[in-house]
Length: 128
Image 1 (cartoon, rainbow, N blue to C red):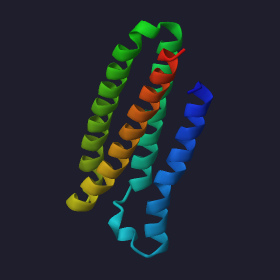
Image 2 (image 1 turned 30 degrees about the vertical axis):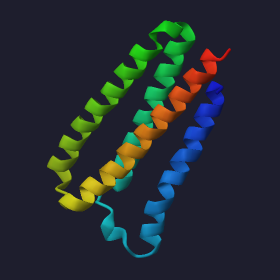
Image 3 (image 1 turned 45 degrees about the vertical axis):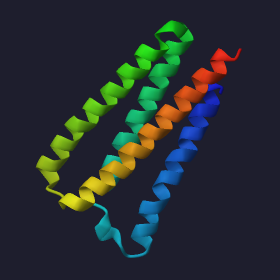
Image 4 (image 1 turned 30 degrees about the horizontal axis):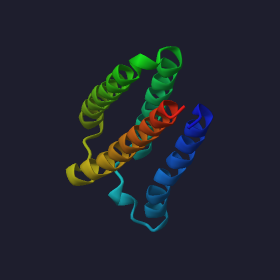
């Protein structure tokens, strides 16, 4: 998979992930979204994009460091999200169940895309 294709598919993926929260808001169920949901959405999405770009740059420079960059980027993303969660919880005091569901929705889908996209990119590089 070419790098620009991965970035375009990330942008499409981000738009698809944004559809259910927008639908909830339009349906009048916006109380299911924690206050500050969109800041959490932007943070996790931008962090995923940064990690994907970081791993692609490392792969272009040294293909042998791909696995280490992938693991390091994913670990960095996890730690950054945990720090963000700590600050978010301390400042906004969200309702627990909706907060967990909203965060896991964002984090797991973005991490799944990250893993799928980068591993698919690696598979295409190995077949050449």
